[in-house]
Image (cartoon, rainbow, N blue to C red; front, side, top):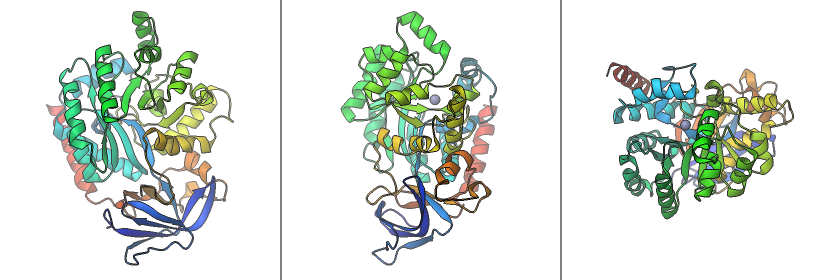
Length: 423
Ligand SMILES: [Zn+2]
C-alpha cells in the first residue's frame, strides 16, 4: 500500500464534472496531493502503485461536519426519546463512566464506518481527545477535534490550550475549540474559547439552537435568542461551525449569513429526536453556508453522508411543499465544496488538491441505468453503498472493500461496550 510521499495512479475511472459523468480519467497522486487529473495523465515516476478505476466513480472526500465519534459505542442503546430526557436519563449517566479506552475503540469503530461510506474528514467535539486523535491517526482519517467545554467540568477549559499545542502541527489532526452550547457555557467561558481560537487561528465548534425548548428557555432568561446573544458578545464569525441551527428566527438567519457562520445541518439526528426541521430554505436564501453532519451514532444511528444527503433533500422539499427546492447538485455541494470552505480544506478532484478521495463501484443496482446527466441524482437519492476504495492524503485506507485490521476493531469495540455496561 502506498504511504505519504509515494506515487499512485488511478487509471480509467469516471468522475463528475459540471454535474455530468466524465469517463476514462486518470488521477495521478504524488506526495499526498493530486499531481494530475484527466485523460492520458501518467505517473511521472513510472513505478507507483496502479489502481484500476474501470467501472468506478472517483469522488472527492465527503466531510462529516458534526459528530461525536466515540458515541458509536452507544448505537442502539437509547432510541425513541426526546433530546433532554434522552441526554439526562440515558446518555449522560453512561458518559459519566466512559474511559479513554472506550473512546479509543469507539473512535476506531466510527472511522471504519466513515471509511466505508466515503467520509475522509470529520469534525468532532467530545471527551478524551488525545485518544481520539491517536486512534484517528492510526486509522488514517483527517479530523478537526475539540475537547468539549462545559461549565460543570471546569477542568475541560484548562485542557484546551495544551491539546492545541500537542496537535497543531499534525498532518491529519487539526485542533479546534468546542464550547458545548450557550445553555452549558457561561459568557466568560464562551469568550475564553473565542480568545483561544483567535490566538491560534482555529475553528470554534458549538451546538446552536437545536430544540425549541432550549431556545424558548434561553430567550425567557436572557431576552435574546441564542444566536442574537452569541452575536451580542462578538462570538460569531466565519471560524464558527454551528451544529443543528434547527430553531432560528428570521433575524437569526440573517445574523448567521452576515457573520459567515457555517451551519452543520444534522438532518437524521434532528428528525429521530423530533427536534424539528431546520429552516435551510431561509438560510440558503440568505446566502449562509450549509454543511452536513451525522451527529453521534447515538442519535442517528449511522455515520453515512449519503443517507444524510437524501434525508436533507426530501425533508426540506416536503416541509416547504416545494419539490424544486434543494436539487441533488445543491445537496451534494453541502457534503463537499461547502464543507471544504468551512473547514479551509484544499480539497476536490483537481491538480494540487490534497488526495482525499474515494472510488465507488458503479456496478450496483442503485446506479443503473446510468446516463451522463443522472450521476449526481444517483449519488444523492439512490446510492446505498459501493464505496470500495478510500484514500486520505495519498494513503489507501480501504482497497476493494478491505480495511486492514477491521475484525480486531469490531471485536474490541464490542468488548468495550460490554465492559462499559457492566461498570
Ligand atoms: Zn452534537
